[in-house]
Amino acid sequence: MSTIGRRLVARWVALGPSYLPFADIATPDLTWPRLLRLSLFQVSVGMTLVLLAGTLNRVMIVELEVPALLVGGMLALPLLFAPFRALIGFRSDTHRSELGWRRIPFIWQGTLLQFGGFAIMPFALLVLAGMGESADAPRWIGHCAAAVAFLLAGAGAHMVQTAGLALVTDLTPEESHPRAVGFMYVALLLGMLCSAMLFGWALSTFNPGRLVAVVQGTALTVMVLNAIAMWKQEARSRDRRPDPRVPRPSFRVAFRALCQGPGTVRALVAVGVGTLGFAMADIVIEPFGGQILSLSVSETTRLTALIALGGLLGFAWATVSVSGGAPPFRVALIATLLGLPAFAGIMGALPTALPVLFLLGNLLLGLAAGMFAHATLCATMSRAPADQAGLALGAWGGVQATAAGLAMAIAGGLRDVVTAYLQQGAALAADTSALVAGYFSVYGLEIVLLLVTVIVVVPLVRLDPEPSAAPQRRSTDRPGVNAERPQLGVPS
Image 1 (tube, one colour):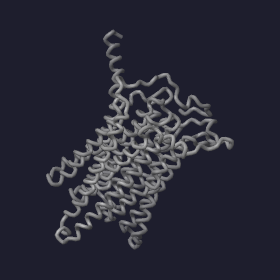
Image 2 (cartoon, rainbow, N blue to C red):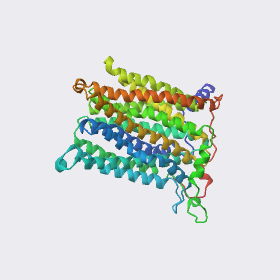
Image 3 (cartoon, one colour):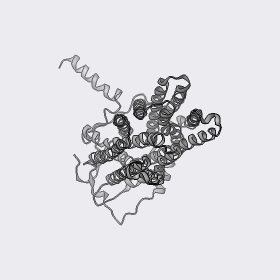
Image 4 (cartoon, helix red, strand yellow):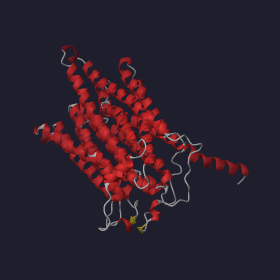
């Protein structure tokens, strides 16, 4: 090869770590095919989120005429399980079993919960739609069955995601953890994007029977994807077998040690308030498009794909910035500020009669939310002790999921209360002005919450280290975590 050719190849190889933030995640032990297969658990979680918070949310409110307050409560039910994400992460850090696994048992249990929730959901939808022999069944039976289905599916997604992300940190070197977890969240957003487009295509001609088929297909797909993702990923170790002579570690002590880091509590508060500000729109975006802007089920489902696309761009932006040395909380502050014009565009689409503002607002909202999530995740992991990756991920995920569940419940209740109050007047009962006011009250509250998030994040920016002159590079000869432990079998 000529001198010019060698220089071109060297330049091309150097572009990977600089412009492709995930180019150096793979190792000889964790190859790209294995890493991509592992990311399938995030795809299944993305499908679950789109189906619950996107398609079923809009269908139950608009087509099945279930009160938004009740639907918001159903979507908020998994928050009863969300605070236990920190405990799940801690247990997966310290779990010992005869099979020698730590993470896999929790991923499998979460998969079974997801499948159980989707198995119950079709019966609830048939009762709510009054189809066939279920036409005479009381609607409260459908409401209760739907609530149980939402709870099981949401709880399963929490468990799968927490244990799965902890497994990713086990399989990658410590300096690559932020990029590896960021790659997994890109897989989550790609799963949301693709599943939203697929659901939109499948429901282009809506009827309850087709919706039931979509739910059943999702249940089977989730089970298959998670099984493929888990296959031969975690090596079995003799050190993980139970020993009655060794006392179980204390979750309280471990969590207290995690919170003693500088700014850790404030960082978790910022995650909670910021997630509230971004997530309240999740339950009202699609109903707003259907009731106010007269969009079809297929078109509003594709809105979820648009938000996921924005989130994917936001994750890429945040990953490039943080990998290049930018302080994570500074990136989170920029993301919070970008959320303000996003809501302005969504609200301005109606009075200006410009649907493009609504689409751009949704895209910008997804971008800002993706940037905020990834930046705060990187900050949380950088503050976690080396042996508490699962606990740190669980704490971040627990706060985020709890805030997202509360956001959905608050958004649905606020929309219903404001609409009902204004509809008491005869003048507003005949048009959509009361509905518009209900939706706008939610968007206005989100703007206020984002401003509060700015106030909380600004002191954290001062705690961030100064930007480094060059991004840290991963050593290619560092062995993986599993290579340091006695093995019963090496995963392929």
